[in-house]
Length: 367
Ligand SMILES: *Cc1c(COP(=O)(O)O)cnc(C)c1O
Image (cartoon, rainbow, N blue to C red; front, side, top):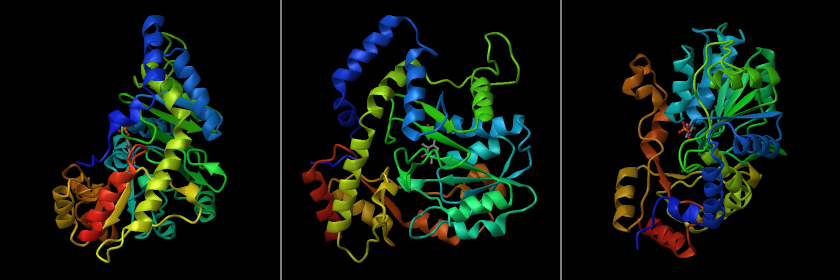
């Protein structure tokens, strides 16, 4: 039997009846953009994250892009300013910065958490720095009082890329409520996935919320009246309807992922394989991905494939080594580069079976 990396069909089949009924309802309503489903979802998400405002947008990249675009229109930052960002992240984090003509300044991750090394941020702050973007990579929260103090000392915004960590905590707060603004992705494979693209921004800053909401809708708060130059980036009623249903099960799904992660950590015993660390507070990880490291990563991937186990690499090429960013290709970020050489993501989801988990573990222990 093949163990799929992620059986999305099975994930969504868990909620088949509810979703089918709701989709028919939206279909029959005749109202498909900016209606009650989106309004409900924005309220539900804001309540779940415990923030003043949530704004639905078209996808996670747009959520990030629009946060920066709003800050630029508000005069908080301007093209040419610098944004500190982890060097080890999905390309969207960097694209959102460069798309706004801001300059990403890469900071190395902590080899134990794969998240930005907060102790290495201050040395990268210059007179042009306006923000720090943190990415809760693989579903693991990154935050600290030191980070907050740093932002205060240098008057910087902190922006959370929460695309991989919806539902995770820092102390008793949810990621997405820790800083000035946060971006969410509802790409189907994310922990809260739609049946297509979707995204959201959360914030406690009412001015930012108002500005961003207008920009996402052609720059207008009143139909055909354009106060600022905006874009079209909207969450639609069908996706919001699905998300309203799935949000109610998110805590269960994340708990199930924690069980799978604990099983792997307890049962994979192979000196060649470095396991991810369970944070002391289990609520600080929602295990969007279960990422191991191995010096012979490519051989390990081949071995697992022969054992019928699908794996993926998140990510094979770091942003600063991509062709799209030749201006940064000369940078040397050895920890980031080592991570990209060595990581491999194992199957993890809310629907993986005990048998499948055992098959994965046995194959890893045989390597
Ligand atoms: C998925 C993801 C995004 C982008 O989300 P989309 O909805 O695909 O645009 C941004 N950042 C990170 C870390 C992601 O994993």
